[in-house]
Length: 328
Image 1: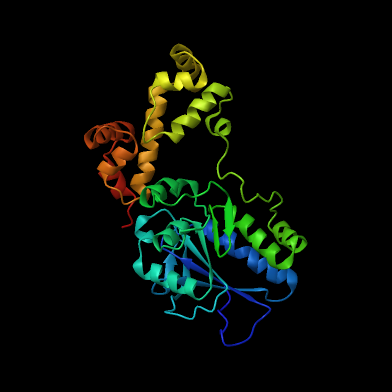
Image 2: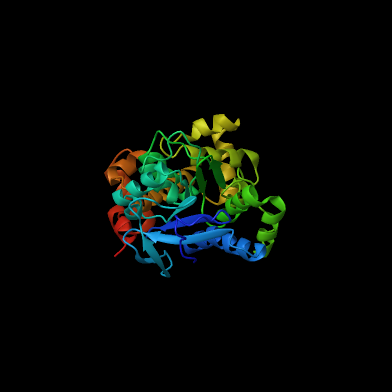
């Protein structure tokens, strides 16, 4: 990456962009966000953008896949940046960092536009920097964020640009967001050239979905069954009865049972239970909630009932599952 220019040196031609890397950050998300700026420099024949990586304490930062990047230490003040993106994966240990939160608040006070990539939006939320802003986060981290910050409501969008907050869902979504940012400065034609450089021919709209549609994810197309599956995903905390679901779609319980048997090869109860346990497994990985709190958040009557069902499904207790995902 390029060295950060001296803020005292006038550089009207270059926007200065920082990437704050937290341990366990996704290398693919980071590359999707940073590489378009490098390509823009090449295509323009001049340094439109200068980028630098930061880390708490500086030094080498390990990504989720084990690759390491060298990064500068966080400055106490005078960031000298136009934009700063927080790149974080799915580890609560990486999200709860008071020194990082303070540094981000300082950057915000200096007028730096702040961004969150993948789990980075959680860090911005923990620093109190998303109140009154529209934003998004990777869909897998949404449950943990909603449990931790019930007053915040992330949008299910590929990316959201709301004034001085720039957030995206991770993966390849940063390609779409940087396309919009480059177009904001250099125009749509130039941004298209940058996207073509990466064979990024299908540029996603900001409000585009982060996940495949319900029919794609479940491999079903029966409208009533799709509606039930969608309602199941939306009601893991307060599960609806089979009778209530049948009334919602205008079918009998016997017809609902037949739909699950013929299209999913399972029962209503088994499908609902699997969805709730998968949701619980995500909360164990990505939130600091206790086992009892997760049991309540996924509609189980008690922590012991939840633990028993979890062990039956995954072959280990919730505490063992959580420990397996903690960094050594």
